[in-house]
Structures are given as structure tokens and as C-alpha cells.
Image (tube, rainbow, N blue to C red; front, top):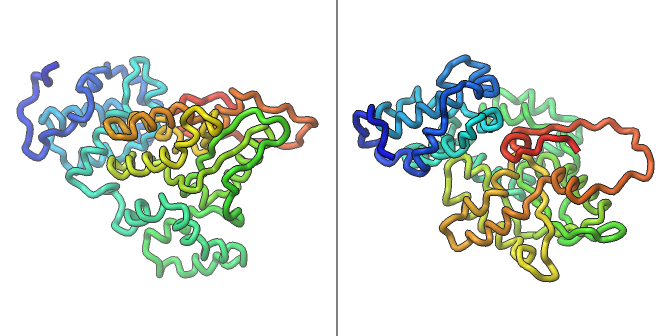
Length: 348
């Protein structure tokens, strides 16, 4: 289809923007407005440009050359949380995620990744967060201060710290002692019903290691042999959402290699690759798309087809019935990456 007839020109610095998706994706939006109430940034600001349809219009206009890529345009685009609530609300099935992803990926051609953060935050984001061992080491002083009840020292020294570290100090949860290293294979309890791989994650494992401990225990109690490859790494979501395609592909390919023995028929074949982080799951399931056109495309498709959220997997497997009443009140959080990106909405 030809570009919009109202397009006047394409500015030299905009040439090629938006060509990484099918132009018809823009045209799927019929501007009905049903997405507005679901968009947290539009609800907060009331600005049409901070809504899904506003951003679709802006990025299409930039692509056509009708609008310059000004700081104001980038501000509206960068405010998007990529929660995908708009996709759930949209009756036309607009693939908004592909449109905002097109923007993020094209921005890396003209701006540093995550341009809204400073250099220190950017370094921490891409050189610390995706690496589990580095994260554990970096958080060790915080764990020690928490155990000794001396976190007030950090708060007292707050004004002496860079703003980035002050903000980090404010959001760090109370951390339990880290479990160390899992054995590579953990046996099923009782009758073996399935063999699964487990994604440990990077930042989540460093901040909330008890989540992985609980996941392993639940899987074992439900008759699952759990395989945890030592060479697995970050899921690639952080780099993918920042538009860093090459880095994202490297992480995805490395995970395909780490889980390779379980992706094909044989004694080590996996029934599923289990993930317990809602934000990681959508990208893990899209490894085939992420690795399209690379030597790892087939492995990526095989990997993605096996990825299951822990709740999704247990419901399909059929959880073992408790032998007695459990006097426990549980809270289920269907995070954006779970309910919108993965369409998993019903609590187990």
C-alpha cells in the first residue's frame, strides 16, 4: 500500500524510520478510543498523545515524514510503559506492541539506549542487571546492612550518594539470604509426572530468591523433575524493550544453547520450560520471532513453544490435591506481562 497521500516529505534524518514493521499495522487502528481507559499514562495525563492511538498516530506521522522527531514527540512515545493493556481492550486486534517496539528499535539508531535515564543508570541497567552473579555481588553490602539492622546508615548517607543510587535504595525490598546454587537436576517427589527446565532470571533472582526456591519446591511436590542449566542467563527482555536487537539476540541464542538438550526428542526432552516472572515470559515465548533470520531461528521456535508460566503449567498439568487444609491466605498478582502480554488472567 502506498504511504499516506497527505505525506509531504521525509526528512533526511527520518528516512527509514518505521520500515521495520508492516505499514498496514498502523492502519489496523480505527481510532475508536476503547483503549484510552486502559492506558495508565493517558489516565494520568489526559493527553491524547500519551494514549495508544495517539502514539500510533505520532509514529505513523514520523514514518511518513509529516512530523519531525522532536523531543516532545519522543517524550510522548517514551512515556509508554509497554504494559499492553491496550491490546487487551482493543476490539480490532491492533498489534500496538509491534508499533512501540518499532519506535524503540529505531531510536537506537540515533540515541543511546534508554535515553530517559542518566549514564550511571544506563550502565547499571545493561551491565549489571542482566547478569545474576554481578547483581548478587552488588547487593551483598545491602544484604549485610539489612541483616545487621543498619539500613539507616544508607538513608543517613542518602544525600552523599548519586541520585541513581538514592532511588535504588528506596525501592530495594527486604531481602532474604540467597540460596546459593541449585543442583543442576532436582528429582520429582513421588511419581514423576513431567520433566521441566527452570528459568532462574537475573534481577528477580537477586532481589527475590525465595520465589525460585518456592517454584522449585512446588514443581517437585507436583511430580516434576526440575532441570536448571548452569549456563542459562538473562531472558533478553531488558535489551529487547530497549531496542537493542543484537544484544537481545545474543542472550536468547545463549539460552537456546543452554537448554538445547531438552528441546529435541530424547531422554532429556523437556515437557516445558517454566518461568515465574511475568515480565520475562512474553519475550521468552517469542524467541522464534526474536531470532528470526539467524542460525538459531529453529531452536528459538522450539524454545518458545515450550515456555510456560508457572501458573499456566501447573493448571495444564493438574496440581496435586492437598492432603489437608492449608490455613493460608494467598494473593495472586496478574501482572501486565502475565494478563495482557501472555493472556493468562484466571488465578489458579
